[in-house]
View (tube, rainbow, N blue to C red):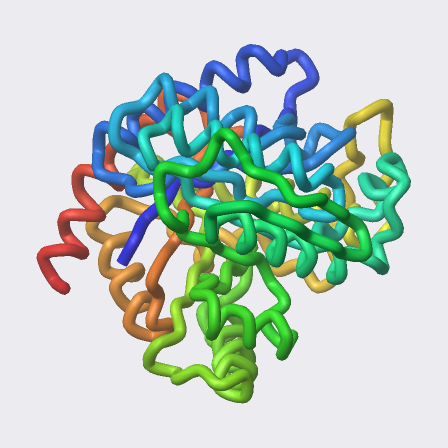
Length: 346
């Protein structure tokens, strides 16, 4: 079981500058590095306060010089928005500077608001993703590369910078029912990666069952299928902090749903908070999330790991509205108390 720290860099408070948010993220990653988290993940979004990290590879490379042992990676690279040849070079630089600590996450993206600013049609995102993954595989095989794709053409080329690792771990977000993606996952070892939001454990289990069905149809064995989730986590015994965490998670889901559903309203780059369709009451959201003292969260998480057969969980802990001191305490308590508890029971 692998545990990661997910960094979204949301700017809920207009008075909180990007520099302050980046600085807080650095402190959070350093605590995760000290306390046993395996990976720090950095999101990618553009042109809104939902996420102030338009370049997760930049964050990954910067964090390489600020940390010692934790692995680092984008979660996820929105593949259709990239010039792919330069992306390969950035991947090589990041793995070199981190001493082989790079982990890669890829996805199609889903916010049309972002895509049209790049001049990319959202409907082509799946094809862009597959071509990016094919080019990456060619790069990782070493030697001279020649590539003739729909979106990328590369004449015979030797790259001067390669990854330290023969093949960094590769996670791919969503697309659980896509037979072609799962076929590639079976053949190439991609890890299916899913954001869970405020979904119940039964709903997450239903998602996994769909992935299993497709994975098996694609030629894989259920027992061999990895499964990664992203979960909101807040280790606290303070009821007011717990409520702030639930409210912040609701805020994130609301503005993400508004962008996905194309009904989001913006004031400059700030998204208006609008209740999401079918959203549960705040009390229920709090109950569904991994919020509570270390022992409570550890026991609940043990049940989730057993039920979902999890291989990786990315912990979203810098929840907007929760003060930095409480976020850092939560990360430290998870690393020093929850992870050892789970390891001792495994």
